[in-house]
Length: 110
Image (cartoon, rainbow, N blue to C red; front, side):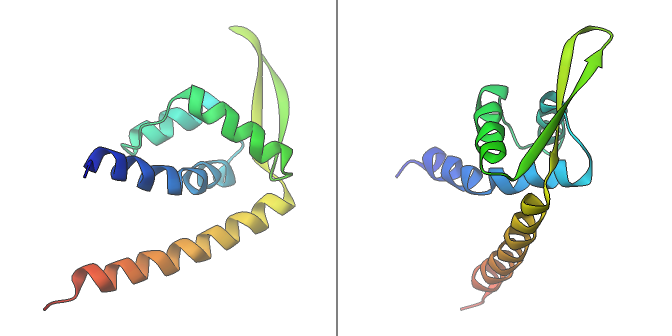
């Protein structure tokens, strides 16, 4: 078995939840999301992030606004919609259940 593939699949499974967690705290510019993820040692590329943000926006989970930049073109800042906040809350609940279940299973003594 290839451990790298399994690790990649695990990260993909929680990527959306982590991105929404960043945006939930504050309106976010994509490169700020990438930077925060890197600081947490969760590697993500902008080429992975942008399609995910577009999919979440098209699903009604995110909205955005353009902000003029003094150092280049306008920037698109994302925030959660009301529907996105409800979706996040459901993911948060699921994450807590999974985290608890995995802890119980992996810490069990024989």
